[in-house]
Picture 1 (spheres, rainbow, N blue to C red):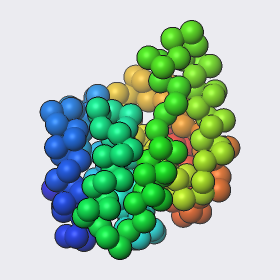
Picture 2 (picture 1 turned 90 degrees about the vertical axis):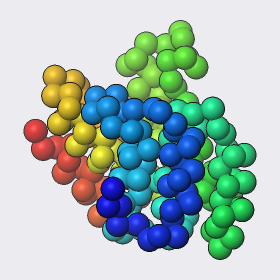
Picture 3 (picture 1 turned 135 degrees about the vertical axis):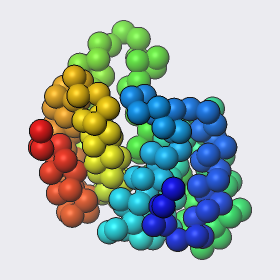
Picture 4 (picture 1 turned 60 degrees about the vertical axis):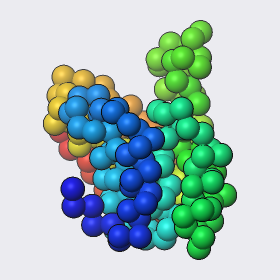
Length: 182
């Protein structure tokens, strides 16, 4: 896979491959680890700091694996001494969905989406910038591999982008273009 990421990120890519294990993307069935690598590649075009790339690479670890913020912090601290491990970990936590079905069994999908959208509107501009890359890649993938679901999904992401507007302007514009195109 051509990631266009500097080779210094190879240890982090190898770690997410381990942490995400045999997970596959929902509709494309690609190895899941390819998603955060693609998000990091999107982000790197405009935010090429170690903290941005590492946050993008680890953005789904807490939500989708048994590994937590301590694991991310420790890994970054041990392998990227020049990076701010606290910033990376805090950003990953900002990007971790707090309103997953299993955590909020009394709420329907629409209410969970409303609450998560509100929460995302309040995260740091830096974290919002990483989320733009996530939305960009997910929307491209959903449109390609789940066209019947795409209209609903794109509508939800459009709602998020309407209120999550403090991040990197060019990354936001790219995400909006992907969400608007049909």
